[in-house]
Image 1 (cartoon, one colour):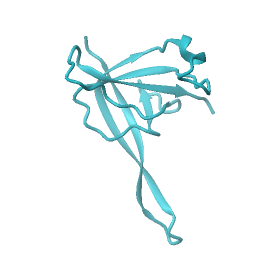
Image 2 (spheres, one colour; image 1 turned 60 degrees about the vertical axis):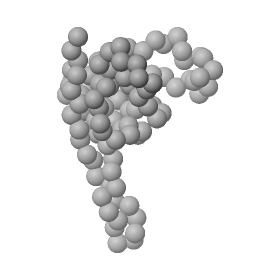
Image 3 (cartoon, one colour; image 1 turned 135 degrees about the horizontal axis):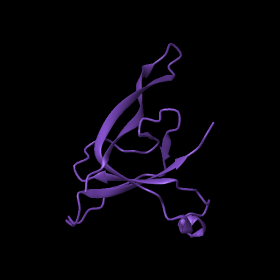
Image 4 (cartoon, rainbow, N blue to C red; image 1 turned 135 degrees about the vertical axis):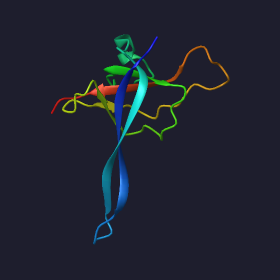
Length: 114
């Protein structure tokens, strides 16, 4: 099984302005061999989603992903810059020595227009 390439957009502080307010820039990182899946919508009412946060896609990151935390990142899928996905929560990789597949981190994302 082989995945596809996505782009992760991360907002990074690049300095401060004259008023000592943070200035941010976007950093882009292409991630190869990503599996993209539709979520199981039956969890929306579960206790682990008390606010009913909708998840529109699940991105399965490869085990060799060495990038930074994904909190607050946007994900561009199939080149659609106008409709990015937004990472939900603080994704963490599966650990414990289990190596059943090449993918070990599920990243849930939501999609909003406008």
